[in-house]
Image (cartoon, rainbow, N blue to C red; front, side, top):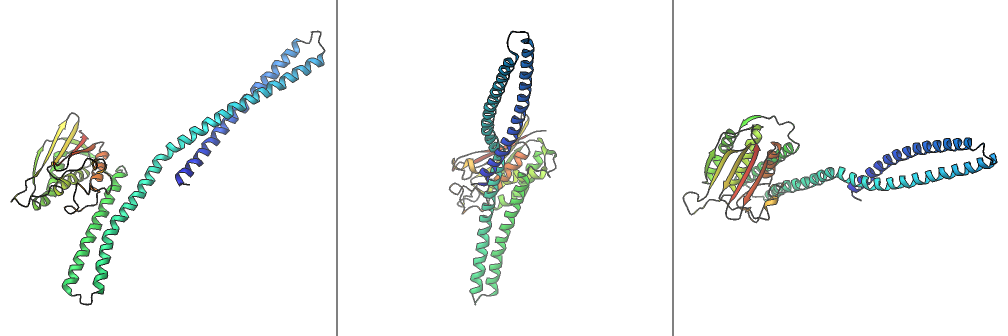
Length: 340
């Protein structure tokens, strides 16, 4: 039996035990009160018929039989009521136990998937490093140049694992409701400018042109977290906008706009890249998810954690993030955060 089902049954049993004790306790009190009232009533009746021409002993026996019968009737009806209460309470307790444990079950399942996915992602570079080292150790003609090449390759794999560890730490931090994240009044225009500066080198390298239309909009949040959110979106836009190598400059570009709409700050990151297939859109914010069909692995390295982190940051700031995209037509990621 699954641990969730076992715990659910135990919790149901405890609920039912508590309800049974309360119900039986109240029934005992009700029984005592009712029987006391019956006895008092029969005593009054006995007193009133004393003057009647009926043998006193016969009257007493008749009243005692009626009293015993009334007590049995009360006890039987209370037993039926208690049985009904316990059956209904048992079903309700089982339902409520399931509802109470559902978030725990979801968290446990999510943790299992997280560990499995993280283990898989770590296993790949470790396996690669181990294979290279084993091959090198068997090579008796290994020279200094080849050794340096091997070390360089291993260093790249270590950097990948370091990046994965940093991603996992960030994700864990934001998924924990960001309790240690300090919030203040932040100008989103400065946030976007800083994120662009961080990614400008990659854009230049890929010959991607970035244009922007930024209004000054304040929000209540953590500046560094918001810079990370925007940086993730800009970085993704750059990586998934392939350069047309037949032309001296890229045929595609990226546009970033920031505006105030009502009581919200609205950020749009639009690219003219390879786009996302419709079936992949509902999953792109899931951890470790990579749309292999629409986003080519030969073009982009990654762990599928960036958008998950971006979503967590948006939710931490009581905001939302969504995407509109189609294969070959690019994507538009929109972040909406309450303005302050």
